[in-house]
Length: 109
Image (cartoon, helix red, strand yellow):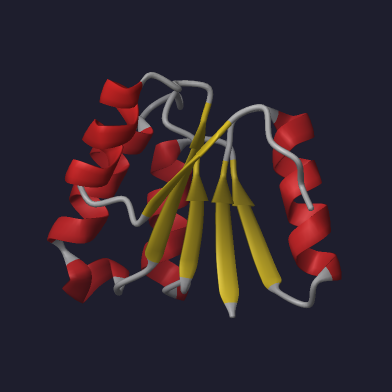
C-alpha cells in the first residue's frame, strides 16, 4: 500500500511517516497541497493523510480536485488530519469527499 502524507509541519510529517513506514507501508511526503497533488498524480497512492491548513493548495481544495478527477489521481482514501476540530469543520471535510477525519493532537498508535 502506498501512502501520501501531506503535512506542512515537518515534525508531524516525519512522525506520521515514521510510524507508517515501520508498519510496512511505502510512504511519500509533501509539505504543501500542490506538491502533494503532483506526487499523487505520479504515483497513484492508495491513501492520503491530509492536513487542511496547507500552503499553496489547502486540504479542502486538494480533496475536491482529487475526488473530482479520479482519471488523473486514482481513487485514494483521504483521511484529513487537522487541528480544525469544530463539528462544522468535520462535517464539511466529509461532505467534500474525505473518507475520514482525525483531530490533532493525536496518538500515533
